[in-house]
Length: 229
Ligand code: TZP
Ligand code: MG
Image 1: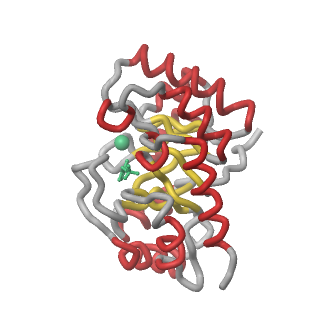
Image 2 (image 1 turned 120 degrees about the vertical axis):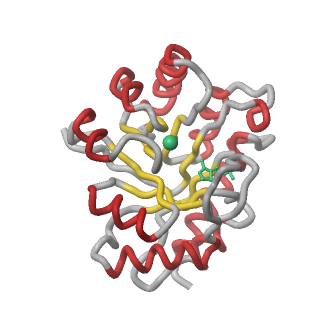
């Protein structure tokens, strides 16, 4: 079987809290966003109980799967196993990579959060399929971020990955990224040997008045950033 191919270009991370979602319906927003061009979805729900998370994950998978868009579950390896989606995203305070890999087997995607060179190298050495690097900017969506990297901090991490043999590991950045700054962040953080593969966003899509249009715009910006010059 093998791992599914993943396009990390426009990576949507969900948030179901009223401050971000408002009165919107998460599944309807994700459906609109993948129609608009989101290439990968992470279901992130820090508050709901197991049954609600499994039910929502199943409904999200029914939306993403027919379009070939991978669905990853934040933190909860058990949910990914139960739902049979494409993988998980784990943070520095979650399950160790190797334990997640042992549970999920070789064919699932496991992404890891990294906020420093050390964390990024450790995740790559463990075998992470991709890195979510951040926070690039301060964001009200996640108030407990340890470091604000900025484009130069991101660039240092990308350089360190390239110079230690991990240039091929896909990377996205997260934290305060939106349609207005995505292109600049991708360009400004690039090094000659390593660029980000995409941007991960929460509020830029979930809280947007028109999530499909927001996704479409982000995709255009990501594609524009990848064109040399
Ligand atoms: N991890 C680092 S910052 C962040 C996460 C989950 C939240 C990003 O939210 P937004 O709304 O895209 O700034
Ligand atoms: Mg986590």
